Length: 184
Image (cartoon, rainbow, N blue to C red; front, side, top):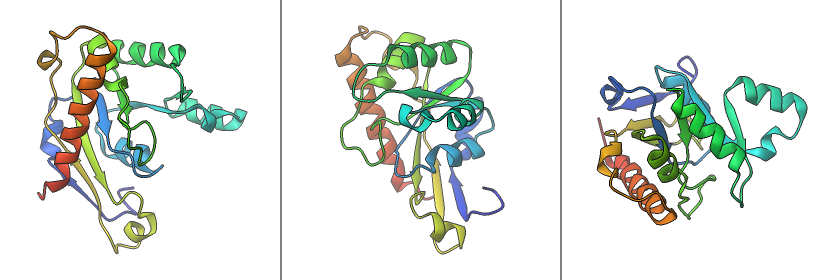
């Protein structure tokens, strides 16, 4: 990515002293996970739709890339447990609040992971990842904006229930969207 894409990182200084967090980003392209992973100074694990791993070769590759397959449209206890274990083992997890590219409904997963693991959230806004060739040929610029970490302590008093999870997820998505105005 560093060699081939015209990109700009905004507020990269906010990554200082960040480790083992829930990374929350908007999701506009299937390139979002590799773009985000390539610029972070630490290894991350991703949640991805299980359909991507239905073939054995793809499953092996995605497993090697730290992908946790998750079945959409229903609670996937196995994927939730693996995600919580990932965070509890001091690793970072990338999750998209919408659950799918350009989704309009915010899912409660981020809140579930925050309250059950006591991890902070790092909001990231990504722009033009869906303009792959324009960024590759330097017509447009891929922009990745880092926000202030959302501390677990801000929500520590909430009960661990679906309403609290949803509240945290919606707050996080609001913070992500506010980042699109950052110019640095």
